[in-house]
Image 1 (spheres, one colour):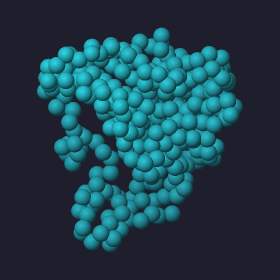
Image 2 (tube, rainbow, N blue to C red):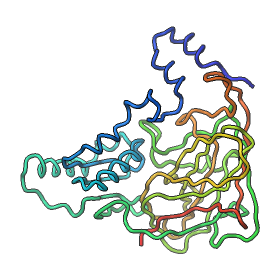
Image 3 (tube, rainbow, N blue to C red):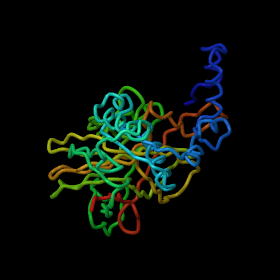
Image 4 (spheres, helix red, strand yellow):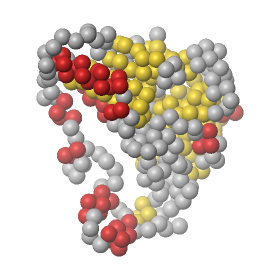
Length: 335
């Protein structure tokens, strides 16, 4: 099935009133190395910063990855930098009493030069699940790696299964996997019930047995997948969720990757967005794998015809696990 020619559709509907949209169609992938997006790259400013800086954000803020990346670079440079990250999305950050208090104290200390109550630490972050604040000298805190391996029966197990296996799903770009919660700019973001998402036929899930003890993670969860697809271009949504005792699932963190070039099975290293969460005793850790998150990300039609005309084509994704396959999830567990 052939999709619409976006350039012609934009010209027909907007009649030259939205020239920026035509430019975006010509540059569909945001990459600050592309001259078109170069002016959006503020990373160079981090190299010139020489003033005290307070960074405030939320785990579900669309800008959370940039905030933490900026903190890491400023901290590396030895800049006087502090970080506060709460359980908020983008619109909630500015409405929090904790944020106002921290901002006030920071400006009093560094601009007004007034004496304020000493900070407990330069890094404050909220642990979802535990509903507690943590105070550390730096982010991320010290952790140890806990590995769970993908296996048959859609299970996450430890140790790795000796027998090799595989699981597949078919992505249909005409019926894309929907966005459910996550790091969004405005409405619909944050922690959401993704039980129905996990039950879709175009989503693979791998789930642990109920945990025997609490597991608190802080930092980047890493997912290693032995993945193959039968199409030239495909996308991957990889998400970690928590399943409660009633079987309800809620998202914790995720990442999205656009792949290109048809390949046999290959190992992908996927670093999910930073998080701080306590998986409590009795709950289950779930890994979700899908081929889209629409409308958060534009649908990958799987076969391009020029820059703006697409050929819709289903894509089969296959995940290999067990034996010599390296598919696993690595959790940064607080020591």
